[in-house]
Amino acid sequence: MNTTFRFCAAAAALALTSTLASAHGDESHAAAAPPYDASKVEATAFGQQGDPKKVTKTIALDMSDAMRFTPARVSVRRGETVRFVVRNRGKLLHEMVLGTPLALQEHAALMKKFPEMEHADANMAHVRPGAQGAIVWQFTQAGEFEFACLQPGHFEAGMIGKVSVK
Image (tube, rainbow, N blue to C red; front, side):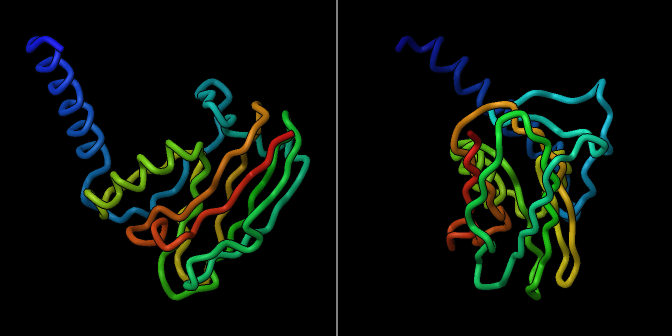
């Protein structure tokens, strides 16, 4: 690699990291997800925010301080809009974040660097102890995806589940 290319690559990586860090701030990680607005829905490799009026399946998930989701594996059909009702049965803050394995690993690493970052996306639910949250998601792509708790240490302890989309 030439020096100019390496410098540009390093500068781009630094800019992205600082933008992500400042965008998340210092406040509580438990922000509310954005309301559904069809004009603002963004497609991802694992689907998109679902229209709550078009939910065809509801899946209840429990999160515990044993760093586990119950159930840890769910199946849905491609195109289906699912409401995940996520209950925190523990005494710690937990969350459910949907994504590809790589995206979740990258987000978990970012959470380790900035544990107090605040963000709220349609693919995540932050749930305080004893409470419940929800995610409405349309699975537009077939494949194997994951959900995880990205609170520092939880992902590393195995708080990960699988979504099979057929």
